[in-house]
Length: 390
Image 1 (tube, rainbow, N blue to C red):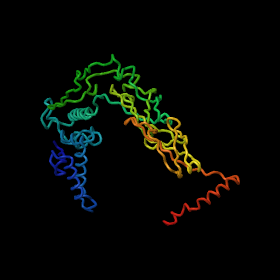
Image 2 (image 1 turned 120 degrees about the vertical axis):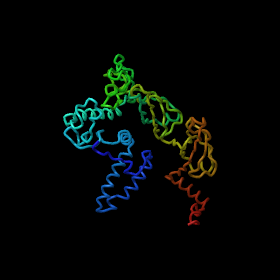
Image 3 (image 1 turned 90 degrees about the vertical axis):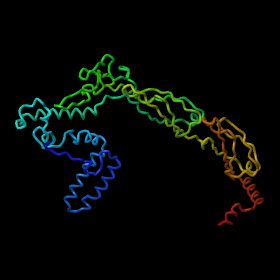
Image 4 (image 1 turned 30 degrees about the horizontal axis):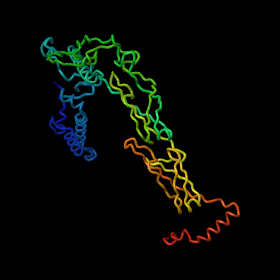
């Protein structure tokens, strides 16, 4: 063999069984040592740094490292780097290697192995390695689970409180009806004649024997006629109406799951799930705080001063609320179990009533006179406490 192959493990100073972490540490140590910025004008260090970088690029990639371990070299084309010649694509080929010794039928002695015999040997090895690396990627497609779908749904306030059933039209991948999700017609599946159903073929290169993935069936061992309706995917995209149950007590941000209503899986795989994110519209005066309902109710000054019984709206209809004497503005009252039903705990929250005092409009003299009389009866300054703390 004319061309000496590089030993990337020796370049980094690690064993062949070195872990990814050991390789990374060795690279960082050598990169700091030979980096051109730390060794300006040092041509030897610059070349050494390039070799270290090349070794790390190969050994840090699992696929490249596997190829190097198995074959003793790495190349993007799958061939060892050798001297370029007319038959080598992109400067790579087997010009630097003499494989004639592996072919018992080669004519003549070593001196008679002229260039006229090499193109056939190199072409055979080039085809062999091309099939080897291409076959590793062209594996038969396995059934895949379908993708989950995400949809947003707007619900009005009462739908979220009471619960309801809505119909939502979604676009999803459905199992192909023509092929039943197989991706091929029922009459189109047969054993691959090239590999006899094994998915692998054996090729000889002189004294060397290689087991390669069958390029005709992609390793599946079967040949199939692709379904024209789904182009071999086993599924087609189409709209579907789905019934969505909104549970009582649903709030903004609630995420509902409908199992099996996502996209159908490829090649007969199971379907994904459908997820619905709910956004609840605001109500005119009912405001939700967790499982509680908060509402602001106006009352008059006489009701606040003298006390009263008033009717207030709730989720269940009207309810009577007792306003005690001396109620002040912004005071809150609680109605037990008049809030939202929590489906998990099967309990209801409360309704919070916040009162707002409405001052009368003094548009006539009699009202103004009463207000002045009231002010005379209560001359205290309501802001005195504030000034005392300034």
